[in-house]
Each structure stands twice: as C-alpha cells, then as structure tokens.
Length: 188
Image (cartoon, rainbow, N blue to C red; front, side, top):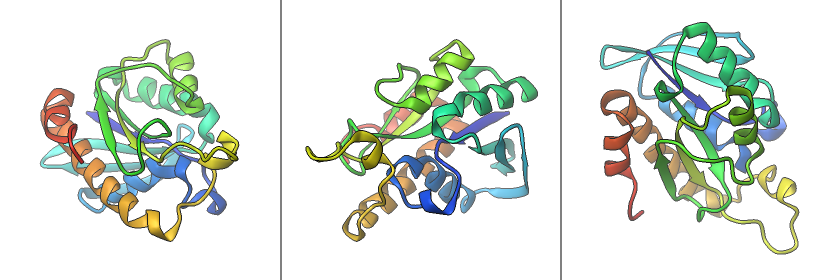
C-alpha cells in the first residue's frame, strides 16, 4: 500500500490559501480514483481508495501545518508503511506560481510542515511533489503570504498545476517516483 498526504490547514478560512495546495491536490486526486471510504483518525481525514486495482490511502492532516509530522508518523506506524511508500504534496515559495517539482527526498527548506515531518519521523526520505506558490512580495511577511488566498488570476494556473500534480501522484502509485519525475518534471 502507498500513502499520499497533502499538507494544509483545516478550517474554512484556509480553504483557498497557498499553504493548502496539498489539500486542494488531494481533492483533485479523489476525482480520479475509486473512493471506498472517508473517515477521521490518526490525526487526519483519511480516504481509503483504489487506483487501477491497487489499494491506496489519501490523507489530509488535521494537526495544522506546523505539526504535520505527527499525522504523517501516526499514519506510517499504523499502516506499517515505510517512508519510501509515502508521497507528500506541499506548497513551495521557491518555485514560480503553478510549477510542480517531484523529488525522491530532500530537506525542509523554510517550510514548517516539512520541518515537522523530518523531525518527527527522523528521515527526509519521502517522495514529494512541491507546487509553486511564488515568493512573497517584498512588503509581505512569509506567514501572511502562505496563508493568503489565491487571486482570481492565479486560480487558472493553480487549477492546471493541481491537475498535473494529481496525475503525477497517480503515476507515483503506478510506476514509482523515478518514472513520475521523468514524466512530470521539466518545462511547464
């Protein structure tokens, strides 16, 4: 079994914010898979699903971004899934708006969700899809930027990038991170 976790913050006030791009992408993946059950537990909203005959688990942590590692570790331990079989989807301020980048592992950078995941799990060996939300303008604080909503002009780019990220996540399920990187990294 593989687990796909989209990072974000729970609550209506965060629904269309940059930090919630992981949740938005999970919703896009859910449109493409056979959903069997939705439930809460293990500090997450959990979606049991299947894709092309393989059982998968999709999750949205309910811990808020800065404590995402607690939910990730709880899911991994309960389902006995190693880090290599977990894909995490998050926002990235260092990528231009709408660009996606897949990696087999890596550091946290300035991302507090990733800091929590690496600290709680003791590893950075998680496959990841990072979706660009752009850097904050000069007069913005980072926290205010990632918690701000996308503009109407940004929504088309975000919609296209979450569709592509959903396709990449399903490619990870089917073919692994290396093939997914080969297919989805590159010019966008």
